Image (cartoon, rainbow, N blue to C red):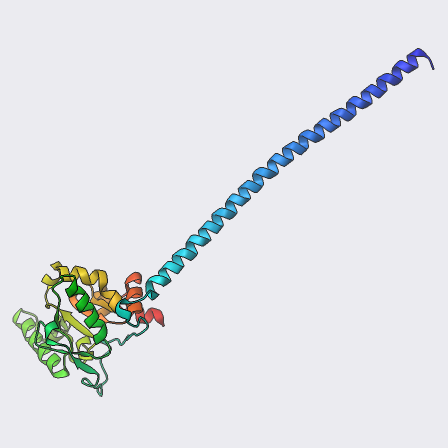
Length: 270
């Protein structure tokens, strides 16, 4: 082999080695780029998964918290499951054979601020616990008007009709107008023994500490403020801050959380 052929052969070997080195270098660069890109993608995916997991956890926690707010224990060991969702209003009167006296008990005189003294015996433990706790905290609170008989309701309604006429309401419209203030006999919650007026029956109650205390605590004893201004179209009754109705502890908490009156809540549960 000539010197020239040897030189050419050495050059070809050198070029071959250089080509191999270059290919390996390119492969190494490509591998590095791929590894870095994959790591970033994995980090993004993990971040997304963490975010989703966090959202799910927060959602589950929120759901659990909402449920707990309805089912947490009631004060004094009261049964949070006991409820009464009887709807009585202008278009849902009590049956004609309704026994107005069957399930009543007498409220002790120390709690009474008016002349009426009867309440449904099943809700009395809840009402007594609420009154005792409020009084223990220095809140001036008492029962103004609990259960009313059919005859008492009739007398109050007829008195309100006359008042409307005196105030200039046409006689043909007086009964309907009166019914927004005093329910027709047989259509009042007072006829059931499940509701009561507290301290008084006028708008001044809304400015008292008793009203503020009830807004904060009454649901834990199963009571809701039955007639708000915002729900008048649903209830058919004007705003009455003094009128409170027993529905049940768990129900009262849920009604308040959902911002529903009793008519809405019963329909919602259907």
